[in-house]
Length: 160
Image (cartoon, rainbow, N blue to C red; front, side):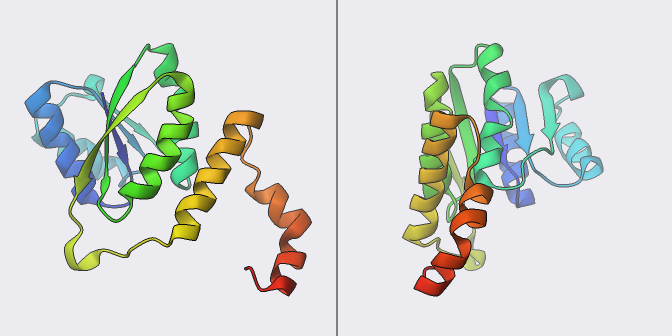
């Protein structure tokens, strides 16, 4: 199947074309508004049964944690991961930890972002990787817990 990480309609367009070519179902996590997404996928010949729009995610970690249980129950073993080229490094790290913990393999499908690319810092990539690992271990996103307990200390230390 195809998993699209929301944030840019070019990702959805790429996924629609890929789904049409390969005959695969699509899950869009945190994508564009439903009216546009339904129209886009219908234009590509993909009916509602082949496209699931999921708006539970609010960041890269929850793009995976919100759907990974359902993917596993559906016995999905391989996912084509569609996101922008500047986001792929972080998405793959988080996804390989979260989805990989459920036996799901990811193959990247990068969408060029051209002049709109914003390179992600190593601390953002590895920070989200650590959050993903903690989610696998605890079943919870501990970002809020860490910020609540250590935020003032981290600010004083200049780490925030």
